Length: 240
Ligand SMILES: NC(=O)c1ccc[n+]([C@@H]2O[C@H](COP(=O)([O-])OP(=O)(O)OC[C@H]3O[C@@H](n4cnc5c(N)ncnc54)[C@H](OP(=O)(O)O)[C@@H]3O)[C@@H](O)[C@H]2O)c1
Image 1 (cartoon, helix red, strand yellow):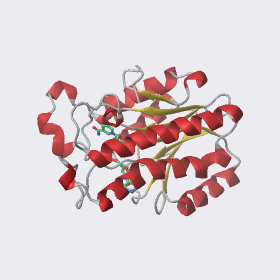
Image 2 (image 1 turned 90 degrees about the vertical axis):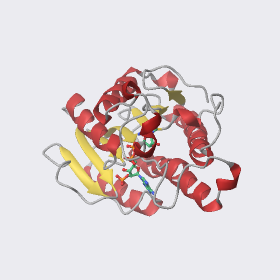
Image 3 (image 1 turned 135 degrees about the vertical axis):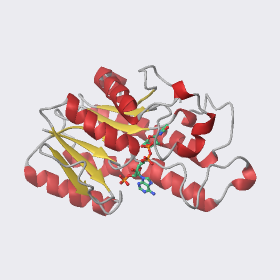
Image 4 (image 1 turned 180 degrees about the vertical axis):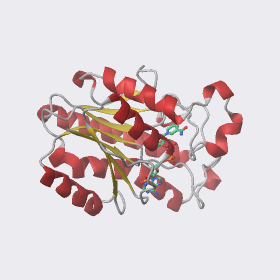
């Protein structure tokens, strides 16, 4: 039996990989990342696998290899996501919007996670696979958008939530034990939040280890009938 983490080199991806190993000692934990292995994340029951990107071809290649092992997948957590990079910074106003930034953030935050779900479909076992979780963000809630700004990040996470909800409805028919979930991890001390940490109270900025523990507690609490939900790290539902 095996579990997979996508985006395993990131702050939350790495912490989730280690926490899954701690909490599910009988499972093989497979860490997928675009980054080369650092040596920190492979040992014994933990397998590191470098993918070229989270495009269909790269993911299908990995899925084919996994299928060959005859193993079953019990859960997947994806920590893929982007807020900023060298060329991109969250927009404050309409004038900051560019087609390139919108396209990039939609690609990484919404499209790649769904392509991953599509590519993994053949190994999402009808009985054994219990969860497909993608980290989302509370700022992607349309109902709770009081501050505006961050156009590309907010809207790409809102799109992600819709895509996951839609997939959950399809999969509910065939995969009765599966929970598809979008989880907000809380503001966590990673490279993604680093430029914005100045405005966060110290007690509201969580370590990756703390967030990983909370995310896995939410995952463990979810029931198949709750599939398609959007969850806060404390386990309460968030409005879309
Ligand atoms: N940190 C926070 O405060 C916070 C708050 C709310 C939501 N989140 C969400 O939590 C998730 C994890 O975030 P994090 O804080 O751990 O960020 P992070 O350290 O930057 O990790 C994000 C991961 O996403 C993948 N990624 C980034 N850019 C990509 C690109 N252009 N193409 C494909 N993959 C890309 C990378 O995976 P590889 O390992 O393959 O490089 C990277 O490790 C994200 O979905 C984020 O939106 C975080």
